Amino acid sequence: MVSRRTVLTGAGVALGGGAAVAAGYRAWRDREPASPPTQDAQGRLLWRNWSGIEHAYPAMRLAPQNEEELADMLRAARTPIRPVGAGHSFTGLATTRGALLSLDRMKGLVADDASAVRATFWAGTRLSEVGPALAAIGQEMPNLPDINEQSLAGGVSTATHGTGLAFPALHARITSFRLMLANGEIKECSPTQNQEVFQAALVGLGAFGLITQIELQNDPLGRVLKRTWIASLDETLEQWPTLQAAHRNVEFYAVPFTGYAVIISHDPTDLPVRPRGPDEDADALMQLKQLRDWLGVAPALRRAVAHMAFDNQAPTEAVDEGWKLLSNERPVRFNEMEYHLPLEQQIPALREVVAAIERHRSDVFFPLEARVIRRDDAWLSPFFGRDCGSIAVHAYYKDDHRFLFDLIEPIFQRHGGRPHWGKLHSQSARGLADLYPRFADACALRRELDPEGRLLNEHLRRVFLDDGA
Image (cartoon, rainbow, N blue to C red; front, side, top):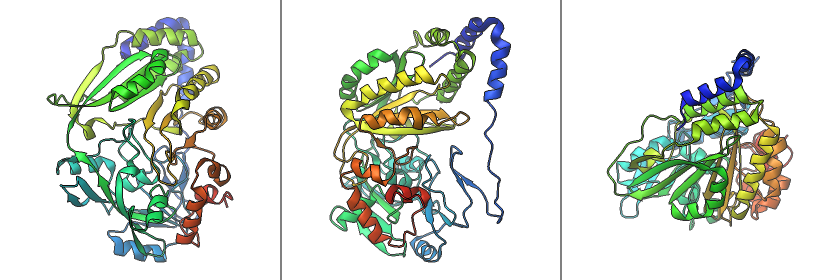
């Protein structure tokens, strides 16, 4: 979408004789963050999440092949017991000094119902594996998150979502699941069986039990037209309600220090397949980083060079099955904070966030992602009882991300936002009780299902008990 030659040539001309200084600054900024030791004093091996921000030295690493093995392992495991999928959560959800439990060996399609357009999967199946498995039986998930490397259980347990006002988050397409409690007992959960457990543990953060199987309500397999285009950020903010109504799936990225937005839509189509080309998002992102590195101290020049790169860029289009187009490769690591706000508060909050970044944080170069999500009734869903607009703010993994808490989170909180459970936030039980109408009910049921707190680590004790102990 953005010409590397345009960006680099423009930046070089703008800097002139300061190029050597800027190059030295880039080298200093690009130092790799310090890594924790590969093992601790007891010889326990290091585990780190995808971005590298969280780590632990588990005493046990468990990988059952089936539910029988899982039940035996849970009964004998050191605590806290924490499930882990792909490690894409930015919070401390999976960290543990006890047992780190992976369901990667419990994956794949279990059964399908063609007449109801439903399919059951083992919970360890990655979202990237769900798409082709469903396509093979003529079904599809009509909405997917930006990244599809998460495990199915990890994605639904943290309220992972895509975009589109007609679509709820992933968990709201679940018709039933099997939940194994910390004592090895299985509960069949659906809207008609163990209904309260179903509503509480649907977005359960792995704190109520371990989901082992998930039945999904899907759609018949079809094709979508993916269209990507660049527009003025101000125009995009004004037209956002119209864009939501005009497209099945739509989102946009506000690019700070440029005045531009990148809009992406997906709509059903009967057009012949036109596969997407090579993924250029990572390359474009690194170009924005270079623009930051060279011109971060000169915001007017930074914006002018960005205009040289963004102006007159033609829209791009692709046609294919939705699972091939809705999610993207994200090889560039980052840390992220995302909040879900009442829909009418999304654009006012985004305007504040962009202004705050451009006023105080010239180091930020990642675009800000804006999406919309339909309401649902899961007790711990950020979308409980209201349609939401989400805003995601990213920080390059080598950069200081503390501004997300100091500068950005207060804006989200003022606008009534609820945090994405798998992304950075400072919320604890006291504040969460005010944000979630059924929070006290969920906490009471969690205590009933896991009275000894065997599934609670430090992060979850703060979320559910407010003690962080």
